[in-house]
Length: 92
Length: 250
Image 1 (cartoon, helix red, strand yellow):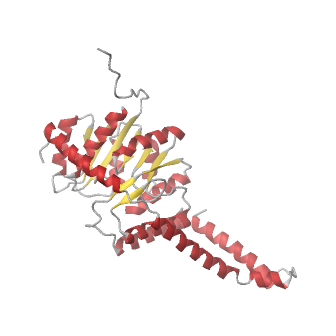
Image 2 (cartoon, rainbow over the protein chains, first blue to last red):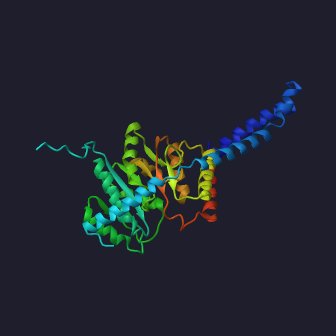
Image 3 (cartoon, each protein chain N blue to C red):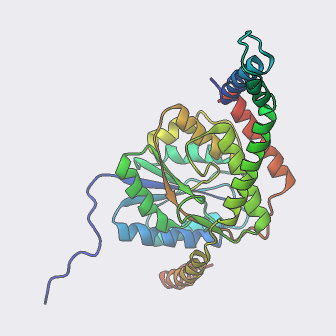
């Protein structure tokens, strides 16, 4: 099953459950409070996911490691390499 | 006189590592990356070969490669050039054909990937007999040098989107610093159809599909060309297109 199909399946299941509870499709006669809580769920979930995404990406950008020592080390090694290669006969 | 211990560990395991270096206009960087590879492989004691796949670089990269071959030997530096600039996937296919190692390392030739991580890749691979080991910029003490906020945002945002849609089980999907078992790389490259960044993503996704095991090692990515080649709208659009294609077809 492709990821797209997995997503469609998952979303369909969630929407089906939501519809059953919100609109009492199976005549379960759940208490009114259940229906009131379930009704805005899809919107809540979307908004929550949006906030989670922003928060996660923001956190990851903020904690993205800056490898200053790696750059310094590389520059030093480049000099070392150039000298050694010149000695070995490399002509650039 | 006290006897001197050998300074290199003896590696009799019979493993050989073939490093594929696709190059295009890397006349200045090629000697440096080769020097670093020789340094770190020499210290590690592992058996290796470097395969330079030059795509007809107009700046004379191949000529420099020939000089390096004279310095380090034709058994260590193999030249397998091509006439024109062709894709990365075909470069890998071309390189694998001539690789005599049982492991293949792919990396960039522009010094953004540092050979010092290769012994760590090898160690990780042996730890779990992983089919592939991927260098990650996003975990542990992995990271990047030379990126501004915009670039970091795009990188993390794109990676987040890929993780949500594809759930690939690897933290860095677009990275191209990896160690593969040769047979694994062969089977993956022939299955992959994407180009550019998405090609590297597709490799990981297909590896998952085929139940290959993936290990990760944090790496530092030193971007020295960012100033010259900003990530433009075109690249972003083709990335999203490729991501959606993978989402819908794998």
